[in-house]
Image (cartoon, rainbow, N blue to C red; front, side):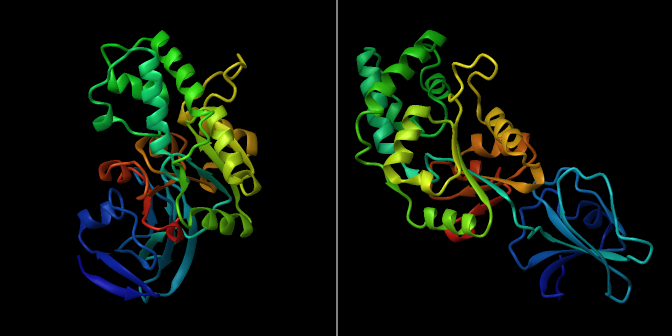
Length: 306
């Protein structure tokens, strides 16, 4: 596609009917300062989009006639007015108010301590898992990972006992190998200082997550820690998977989808964000594979890009 410079944006130009009909649908989020100019267009929709956009409608002479910011995915119609002849689509730059951060693989490298506790728990149960070192990934709930690793062995009772024994080893070891990722908490503090509300939202067990947060002083920065099992004894809530956990947090803090971002490193984070219709950021320093990261709205290779 042709590329031009317009209004300080490096834009691909959609000339043909097929290019104009597609726009940014199905394309990766453009980098800041990039976008797409759609010719012969005075209205757009955002069906099938994965990220919010800003739309600048122009007349035939290239003069701005309307600007619509932070248009969320699945909007039926955004009209530029009678004088609009084309539209410049760029990634939304509207600041987000609510930021939800995953823990394992996002805030800290917890893999070593988690693996040690898993192996100790399996040894207590006299269970062998030959493919553990190859296939284990930190991040998903214990029961979900156990199903993946040992589909022929797994039962609900097995998962409950594994969770109990894992906790006995993990919670009391002092997390000797766990390290914060450099620069991440500095970025979280910068977001908070700029007026955003920041939270931890994790599949991790409450006991382990709260002990880690205490060790590293995270609750001096984050407003609150949320885990999927924090209400396991409350029959009105119970255990929550990541999509339900995000929905719960959003209801509790009064957040609208267009105000929120989920920052994580694996597919469970990005799927949860998509189910709640919020933006997601994939960090490259965690445990997710490249194909998982592509499911996010955008990818951050450094903390400053979050």
